[in-house]
Length: 199
Image (cartoon, rainbow, N blue to C red; front, side, top):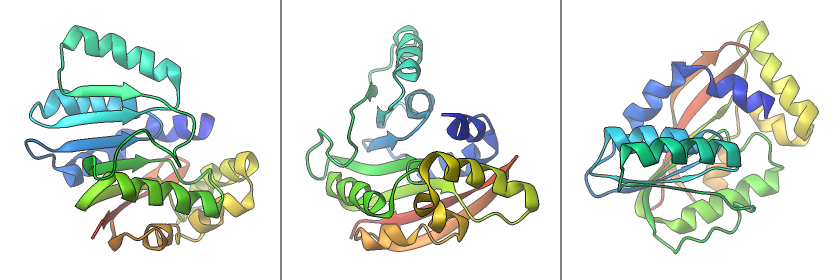
C-alpha cells in the first residue's frame, strides 16, 4: 500500500527500533506488519542466537524474503502470512517479544484493540511489545501521510493517530508500562515508537 511504502522506504526510524528490540540469545521474536519478512530476515542474520518469525500480509514481500533467506542458510528465520490478525495460529505465550510495525493506523478502533489482545495472548508473561506507527504531526508537511490514510481507511481509524493518542489501545488491550521511546519525522509523516509489556 502506498502509505506503508512511503514510510518503509525511510530508514530513519529503523535504528531506534533495532536498538529497543535488543534480542537476547534464545528469545523468540515476532515481527508483524508491512515489511516484516525482510526486516525479520535482517534481524535473523544479525542475531543468530534468537529466533525470528515474520507475519507479512504482502505475498510478494514474502517471496522476495524467501529467495534471500534460501541463499543465506538461516535456521532462525521463518515467514508466513494469514488473513486475520485477530486469530493467529500461535499458541499462548509463544513469543518473548513482538514488533508491531505500521499495523494499527488502518484499523477501526475496535479492531485495534482486538489485534492487540491477540498479540497479548501469544506473548509470554513479561513479554515486550514495540509498536511503531503513524503519529501526531508536528510540522505542516507531516500531515500528508495521515490525510492519505484517512482517504483509504476513514476518519475513525486515523483519529487517534492524528491526536497522538493511539498508544491508549495498548493499555485497553491489557498491556502495562506503555511509554513513548522516541518520535521520528519521516518525510511526509511522523512515526512514534512505543514500548509496553505483558504483566
